[in-house]
Amino acid sequence: MNKTYNLWTSGCQMNISDSQRVGSELEKLGYRYIDSHREADVVVINTCVVRQSAEDRATGFIWWLKPLKKDNPHKIFALMGCLVGVKGNDQLKKTFPHIDVLMPPSNPMPLINYILNKEEAWLASKSIEKRYALQDGDLILPLHEQYNLIATHVPIVYGCSYMCSYCVIPYRRGIERSRPVDEIVFEVRSLVKQGVKEVTLLGQIVDRYGYDISDEVRLADLLQKVHDIDGLERIRFLTSHPNYMTDAILHAVAYLPKVCQHIEIPIQSGDDEILKQMRRNYTADDYRRLIHRIREYLPNSNIATDVIVGFPGETVEQFQRTIDVLESLKMDVCHVAMYSPRPNTVSAKTMPDDVPAKEKKRRLDVVNQLQQEIVAEINKGYEGQTVEVLVEEKHNGKWKGRTRTNKLVFFEDEHDFKGQLVKVRIEWAGPWSMRGLVCPSEL
Image 1 (cartoon, rainbow, N blue to C red):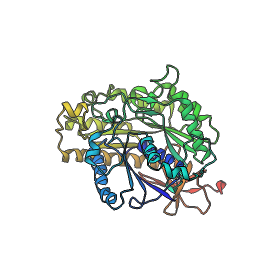
Image 2: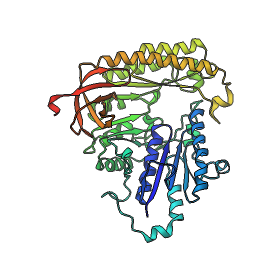
Image 3: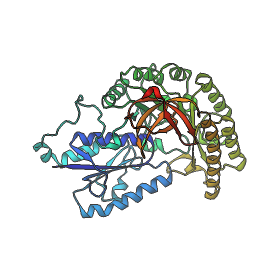
């Protein structure tokens, strides 16, 4: 008796990782992935509510599923992620009666227990074939090709206790909780057994790893432990916070060969008063000094930042200070979002959302245009260089992979390079990707 599942995932890398974990647990029960919401026996909807637009997409999709339940009452719908939150949400069951199971972020067990209870007789009568020769408890990668990954994500810190005034994450994902070192190392080893070559260690403030569990264990120590795993080629981590990017972390990135020189560290605004209102607890000059320090440790690093435009009360002059910072620091990536008031946050409760939507969009476009020009200039410098690319997959007939500094590279070749580290000479570079040729020594 074939049992099938489907995953719909929205939002950040943490949600992607959570969906992978759900798929892993379902496949241990004998389910297999299919690419159809209509046909699957179990449909998991993993949601994001960081912006109102993301919440609207999620609720729209949930309503779209409702007729499928009427056609097949035995179909199981499971709702997961930040729309549910760590404390659950009884109102969701009333709003969406066709949803069978509510799952907090990063916790697949309510669905697994529901299935086990619902199908106890069926499970008892069947022998579930083990899909992998792994120890019990290993995280397994789902069999579907979309999870046949070379690079994947591993959460190391759940939740957040920092309480920026605009952020809903502490309310939906709970307080900061670091996972034990041994548990993380065990998971990475199990992923490497299945062909994973690169892991990205995840946390809302990843630099705060260990602060809640030990006075001795910190991110730099964990990086060393993961670095020692045989068969792993690369390590990344995100997202960092300016107040917790220590010299010990930078030293680990500089001197551990597997750790990539790729730092994601949001500024959010270049204006000190807006930063104060955001409760970020640093100034624009503090951030500038940090970027200069990172570049002293890691002169060839890729630095990414985040910016919110249209925060309550942000004037044109204050927005211009953000532009000034971006122009002067010239970072490789800038993720920009328009401010969106979220339930229960300090800014939503105490600050009027007074920047018009049209002006928010204008500011977003200004940042994106500036960043495109900056990255085009940075990437142009790669032309003629030879870079190391970890090849992840084939895309539209071309091999696709990333450099150690997280630059996206495409190249054509008839050989099978999936999962390999390949030297590629860059022939053309644009703002979003590069194209090159495999060096003859690699063939």
